[in-house]
Image: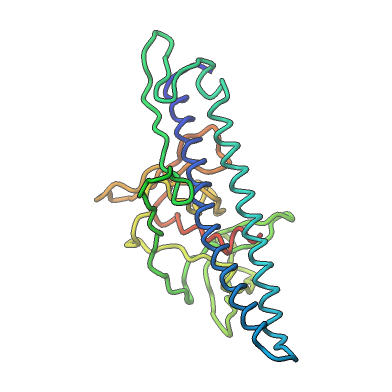
Length: 270
């Protein structure tokens, strides 16, 4: 592989991937702490209660520990993927086989490529004494009703998938949805199986944000990272999106309304 723009793009892609997974670990560890705090409170309540104990409390305690274990597994998975991304950065092929410092890489004619800056990677991983804190990203809730476009979880050829669908009816906590490509037959899902697509005036997801994006020329949604948000004032707002399993492509242009939140509680449970 020759050293050049492609190598620089690969560098940034690997850094972005590592950063995203470290940020996910931040979120997971926050959730773990909340679960363990709740477990401690339940232990205190059960210790003070006279027998026979409330079985619902024991059930809640068991569920809390199971949820904690699931978060620990998420942390292990994100840590492994971050490690893989950093390993790819160290591989000779990622910089055209040429050695160099962490801040620059020398090209064919002795030219220096753009500096690669190590991104900040979150609260739990900052250097001692650093006061840098990453704010939680909060986005407005989208009301889901008949006619709402959503990404819906389903099975395709035995594999978990998220496809574009439209909500037909909502009743008793069930959402009847239909594939946007083939509106018949419709099928019912719960709120845990849908992620609403944003309206045109929805706030932009920032650079580095993990999202679910519709792959160009398909109606399937995949995990991705925002390389660049839409340009202000553009008549057809487009994100630059890098899909996680699209290793050879630095980014793809995806319409703003085809990009939605990555809801880990819904997606990572699969």
